[in-house]
Length: 225
Ligand code: SF4
Image (cartoon, rainbow, N blue to C red; front, side, top):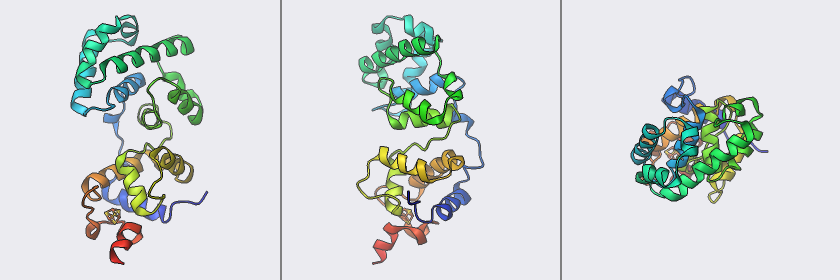
């Protein structure tokens, strides 16, 4: 597969500026990887504040996942309601807990760390409500396994740089980046690109003149033309 053009130069430039590849990100790792998975599930269609509120309420009432598994569905729905889609999310949570108990004999995904990354990812996306991006976040941040989550910033910048076609879907972009970039750079490069998207290459007004990837960027070249 053809590599993204000037990938090394661009990732190096992002790293010089944002520095996430050589900086650990303990705040993104949860003590229990299953907390990370459930939090990501809660974050769908809501903001971080309401996601965290819902998670905190759930944890205060049921500090362990076996307690959530045994809790009445209505109670769980009520506790996480602030994050929206309460019924769907609570049902999925409980379904996931049933699968984990059957598969591992406990309410944990820690065993996935001993699996091959591709098998762990396939297992995670087979769980109710878990998509490719959610699985990648859990793999890279909670399980220390290689994955390159593609959120709105990573998708936009990959397209603007000319690494992928304009219409390529995020799941496909993730597949492409994971098969062409060095796995040891995934975590830090993902974080660098997000910071770049927030700080320089915004959706509405990219600041190309002050961008350290400008000389390699297809979008910027199209502006010059
Ligand atoms: S040159 Fe412009 S469009 Fe390209 S990455 Fe930089 S800010 Fe984004």
